[in-house]
Image 1 (cartoon, rainbow, N blue to C red):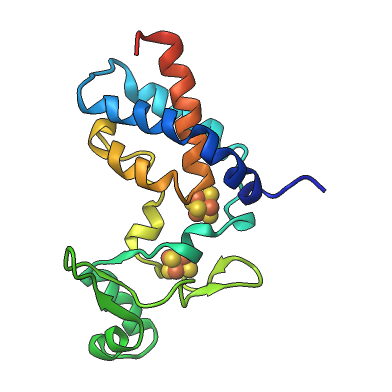
Image 2 (cartoon, rainbow, N blue to C red):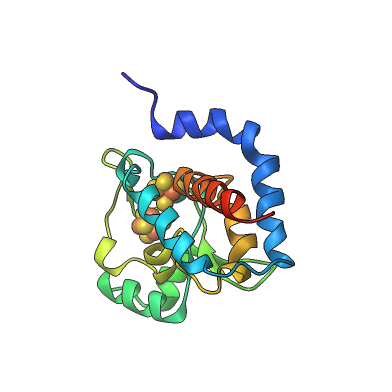
Length: 171
Ligand code: SF4
Ligand code: SF4
């Protein structure tokens, strides 16, 4: 059986990390004409080969940020008050005041199937993760830099994007 996406990712990351971080940091000072097209191509190529149900690492080792709307919607789904939901599952991040999970893996992850048990009403942050389509790309390079540590799809996405950009531009 071929090694899982997560196993391959964990082997490759130490070999590629430095190059990827340097590549991403250059977006702080360089403007790439036509970046959206390259981002879309890299994103499409990534999702053609990544199945999140064979991974779920984001739900296991990271936490989403819950907005007030998320808190209202999800607590109502469980017939809980927002206060009770917060007390049971959430805490406030001391660094930035964000509402985040108390525990990892996420309490809503089914560890047998890797499926989210509140998929239809999951936090907006989960729905948008791993944020490939956020614009302008250069404003989110630091997010991708964080996410290459945990997310095989981000690792592949940045690898594809790096190949495309280094082929077309002096980088
Ligand atoms: S978004 Fe990334 S970390 Fe989350 S399940 Fe998909 S590949 Fe894994
Ligand atoms: S709410 Fe669902 S998608 Fe979001 S971290 Fe938890 S299990 Fe994953």
